[in-house]
Image (cartoon, rainbow, N blue to C red; front, side, top):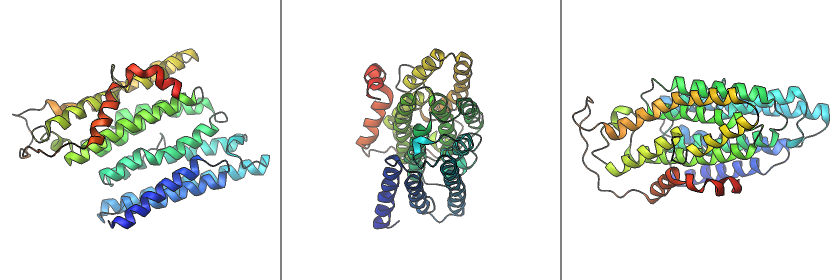
Length: 346
């Protein structure tokens, strides 16, 4: 892709995100979402492969439907209450429609089917944007309207996301699809707590973005798209694979790594709210995700020769690891001791 075109698309992404997260009026929030969608489409389809074109088409259709529902929800609310302010969403039908619209935007179950397919058809760098930055504006809208939305519905969707994200990721061999189902599962943890503690949702999102960025950048650096390729990268970049192991275990939420912090705080808050059953169910469902994280970690680090892959062993790579990957890995695995500071910041 032309560097000038790429710069324009990246600036448009930043502009669209900034407009949405800083707006109070539904029209400007919708405009920001549309700028984001139009900016990411060329980045999905830049390889001109049929799968990329298919991914871009699917992404456009689902996001257009979600944007139409956002407009419909805000217009219905304005018709009944005379309010265009985002925080003044009070009409029950509008709240229901908006919940569906944001679930489609985020890829929250049961509206998650487009996300793995789009991520599979995108390059790893675009997949990183789709999994992180593109989720920030809808999460912001969800935070601003959380007090109006139905907590029972959000809890149901959250548990369904955690279940489907875990189950459907079990038999995947493509790293991008595994990360897509990982994202769906993490969104379940964010959605279940948003009605009770929006700060915890934001903390969970920030840490999720940090850990997912580390995994995507590591895979992109090693040029890994499949598990069979991942099994041969140990000989190529051993230090990078050791970093990947730590980050994957952190994403799984194992102590004493950073990923344990949001799960610990969310379970604690759910217990305080008297939702012991929901806390127990979502904790058990996270074991499904743990399985495929361990599978990725096993393929990355523990499969030393002789192993069963048919791929040729790759030459050792002496190219230095990018400093951003090193910094992100340290943050993805060692922030648990400063958890009191993180909880006060958010």
